[in-house]
Image 1: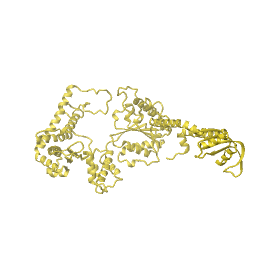
Image 2: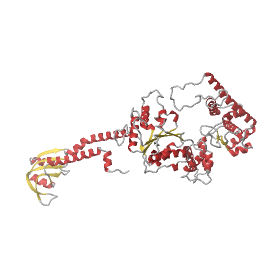
Image 3: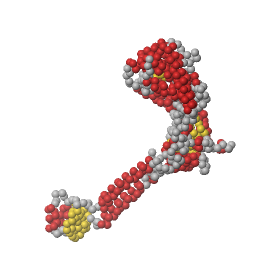
Image 4: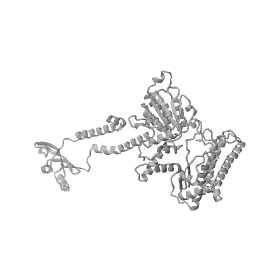
Length: 626
């Protein structure tokens, strides 16, 4: 970036004072030399010796191989640099290095007053020697203070704890637009209406419509909230300020509230304007949730934000765009109309949106013609935009490791396995552990294959991946929004099938089913206590099994159900798990031969695809109830 001289002087005012001080010292040195020292002429050393022999030297000063002196009588001499004769009274010449005591004796014999100075007495030199340490100390102090001010929120080197850290979006830089954001058409339509409101408010106000105060983007992590805000900045064409909510909070009380005031002041000076606050839950959590009462720094910041958005003074021409994946922890006063008038929910993309996202992220990658992005989109349910971007990048890295010029289907499959099942570990298992792992994964596979309505098997492997020694990958055929009770009971049976297979074959169980038991117990607990899927407990929803996103509204979550109901829920949870285990045992006992075949194939191949599983079992997967 090019700065003009006046900009540099404005940002570095101490440079002006330093320059003035230097000019003053130079002028003082010149003046002192002119006032204290009369006009002195440089003569040759031979002329000096001639005047010494003639007895025409009254005094000399010897200083560092240089002689300054005064003649007894003014004499006209031919100077080296001049052609005409010049009347000389005060002179100067250089003393040869071989002259020493002999010259002193001759001067004393001629009764010349002698003065010896070890070092020249220069006012400028002494002034600089005296001032240099202080200049270094002052310069270092200024440097430290500027760094501290900038870190504590200063701007342009001035003390600025209260100044906002919101960054103004540069409209001249390359920008992201809605064309580069795949999916989310309804959300983009809502935001486009807000942008049009800012650009042409008369179009809306003539029928009485008011500009919204705030728009809250709600969605799981990685679904594209921040990317959508960047695209909104690119589409807006109005001043766009971006800030993270955590940047409001400092160790000094009142700094966050002051920064909120400064941010809105700057936005109002450039209205119409947009303000984007990322992760607003950092300051917008419910007040009174902790031990600090209502006077801690975070709650003061939230109070100021509430006041700026809809307080006593009107907030016109400024729209606040905020993003969070924790809407349940936000303060109700922040969510009410008049502050955040619109709540836009961004869900995980469906398969068509995933296909569009994959096309966007494959735009600048060398893809082989055989890669079927539509099939890949159907095989990645539940993945967000960030997951798909990571998938494409991992595929490119896999292709590079294999020294390929293009990304092919094998690279995409390896990248997907790495993300869904974990990276392969270089770990050598004993033959006994390999057999246990093979039967464990074969049990999962066979029960999932036999149960109608369960998710189909995509791949099964006994290669150690991630934290597991074996993995069974099940991929839904379509995106699910509802989970019927029968489907969830099947999931319980599939989760427990690995343990049942170990018990059936080895007449023993191992610790390999730890995660399976944890997942099955958690699923059964939610079925009973939250989803009303138990006939004995009935359609009752309790807080049991609920994962609280933060320790919050009360120091200890109260138990809102009786001990009798808790005992009944325990019995129902155990019944669900035991029935699922018996269902898995019945399927595996009936298909023991296929279980052995699957385990043998896994020991031999280590990884089986869906087609290979179908060839081993010998029939297509059952899709209808038995």
